[in-house]
Amino acid sequence: MKITEIECYVLLVPDYRADACSSAQDDLVVRIHTDEGLVGVGETDTNPWVARAMIEAPGTHIMGLGLKEILIGADPRDVEGLWERMYTGSAMTGRRGLGICAIGALDMALWDLRGKIEGKPTWSLLGGAVQQAVTPYASLLPEGDTLEEYGENLARKAVEAKRLGFRAVKLEVCIKGPYSHNAIQVEDDREIARIVAACRQAIGPGITVMVDVAYCWPDWKAAMRAIEMFADEDIYFVETPLPSDDLDGYAKLTQASPVRIAAGEWLNTRFEFLDYVRLDALDVLQPDVGRVGGLTEARRVAAIARDHGLVVVPHCWKSAIGIAASLHLAAVSPTCAFIEFLPSALADSRLRRELVEGEFELVDGRIPLPQAPGLGIALNEAALEGFQVR
Image (cartoon, rainbow, N blue to C red; front, side):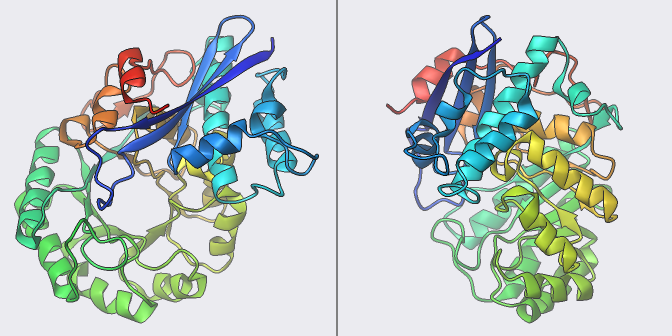
């Protein structure tokens, strides 16, 4: 069996807002075809136009090969071998950032394809399940052009997520710092604490709460001061409190904070996660399957978490393709507590609601492992065509 074609689809919702703190408005979807008619699907969460170029651009020497030309003609069953070939062959151009995100989409599609070739769910090929159901948390980013509207909508979404059966929610309190939501920008950390407290009061004590603040504090002492304002609300973790490159700050904050510190959505490859782990700089590792380099590399990050007694909670702010990949990763990861899950019923993104047919169903707040071959999802072809930007 050989890979015969790789298709890249740049997708964009027509009513996207460039000032929004949501990357679920666009997508890069890849499809890998074989000479026997089987097709694997993957995606990644980065600028889809430049990721497509990384895949499709030809190489001119062996240190900067194009990813597509590396894969065409190869046996798709050799997934981990192909990861090494892509990583090594594109090292001068890629190695981190965009290059790894592009590899991530292709690797995700290759694991989907291998599952379809062997007639098995992907988790069974990744080493076998250590849990038969996975707990998702509802990831909640509200709309609102005023602080009051933002807070009210976030509390409303949290209440609705609880009604839908979720055992956990994550509050996206993105109102301070460089990635604040739309036009909302506050300076007083007490506003963050007020919103967190209001949401906790709205949903009560019987549900796990995480808080994402989108890199909002400039240093660990500022983060520590702010976290102490809402630590009594029984918070499972605080996500991305500091800039990604402030490893020393993360180490000091993690060791001092009364709440777990989580990060990793922007980290590429296991090597960047190891930089944090060696400094005891995180409590919770959050690999995004597409961005970290696909399921091949995400599984390695989960193994690092296991070996160091750390929690792993996959990040995913995209479509149900990535959610499916996170679900398969969680199934084989002994220290995976939750996966990020953007509920389609609460999603503002049409890509999340429409790109994949069907929906993973909650059973007592958990998602049973899929049994279909590969990732276990089917694309909505009309949506794929309708959102495509040529």
